[in-house]
Image (cartoon, rainbow, N blue to C red; front, side, top):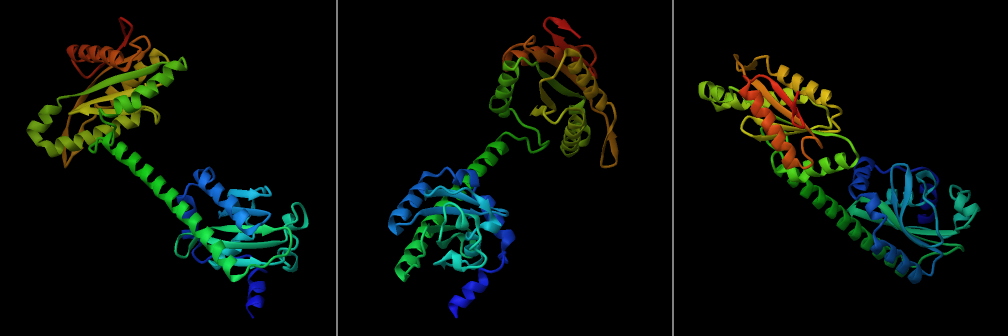
Length: 354
């Protein structure tokens, strides 16, 4: 009866009921990282010795492909999921043993059975991230018909459990790295505007500037200062001032490119960095658009308030080949814009002013 049931299961394509959750689990382990784990290769090598088989492998069953994370013995290429026997292990969630592949109608014509390397028997145990969440199979194959006894089936399951533990460890490492990246990003982000803060200057801006200048392209920078912002806080309160800052960030983003780097330097002061900003005229055009974007009133809670913008800008390498020197040039340009009446921009190129 058990043999009849196995033959029925293997004669049709099977998709587990929890396929969506299972595929999400497959993505969570980082397939490329799994494929480079030396521990899995050692495990496959050890299994080949223990079972004296032609082939031992740690396999991941993805949406459309069987991916070989590690293997020992006969070298086998990845194959489509439809051509894999491991998909049955994923569906069953248990050890699957096929003593003679040539006696199974759905398997007798598989390319690696009728052709090289002429594999003849198969046994696989589920690799689970969580109970019932099978992401792949630890399998062994022979070039002659073979069955597995109770002890060997248990040993195969033990190999699969070790592989499962390594998969879980890899997933935890990925989550930890993502968590650390999220914490670092949070530490560099201003919660009011969603822009980067000063902490991003050495972390993000310096590397971007080095790469841009090394490629022989200009790297622009601009300081932005909102005119009359202190008066808004004094007359209408800090809650209104905070909303003005949030709306100011939206206006700035509407002008700059997706690859530009906006920062809130503090208070009502912003900085923007422009990798590959083009010619001086391009930087002048962006500065003019920024100033113009702040000439419309801000509507806050039924009242309208004005906060114009003064902008100073410059480009490296003419304005300085380091971030510190470039910002000194930009700061002087901003000072000139404010000294000349505010609500305007000044772009410095070397000692000249545009």
